[in-house]
Image (cartoon, rainbow, N blue to C red; front, side, top):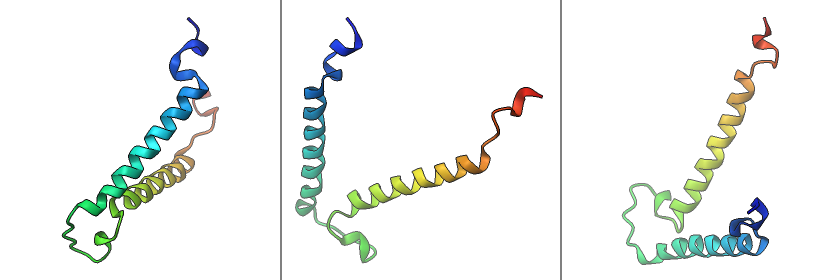
Length: 81
């Protein structure tokens, strides 16, 4: 069996998985209407706060890691002596 024969490598399966994941995430955001919020600050009571805050936090962490990687990067010949 090659990697191309695996069911997770098929284009149709990948499209179905993306559709299922997007539908699940959309359903989770829509369930925000069913939850009674008790905000401590004004912003955390907005619709979909957890979703967009988590997304922006993830983007921020990736940007920070990219910048930190460029700052701490060593040359390819660093250990050659």
